[in-house]
Image (cartoon, helix red, strand yellow):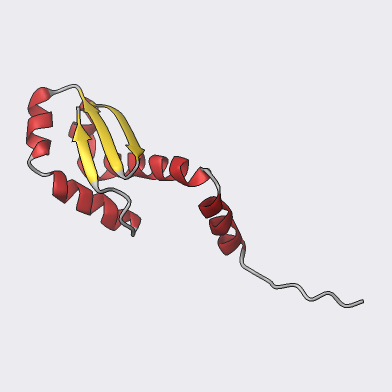
Length: 97
């Protein structure tokens, strides 16, 4: 008996598994945290206490009210930078706390 298997790359199988499971939100959260650190630099990261992504909204807790105010002027630029790095529109809004 001859079996006919449809061959797929490991990458496509893993991406399909991630898309259909709850792993996607966790992986996106980790990606966004990593990109925040990379994009914003050492100085901003030293004042960042918490970052998490929920329903396309990025919540960032900062320990400096002055920095929070400064970053609030560039929210759209930050959204665009992170979305460009990821390659998809993962963030629609940023909430600075």
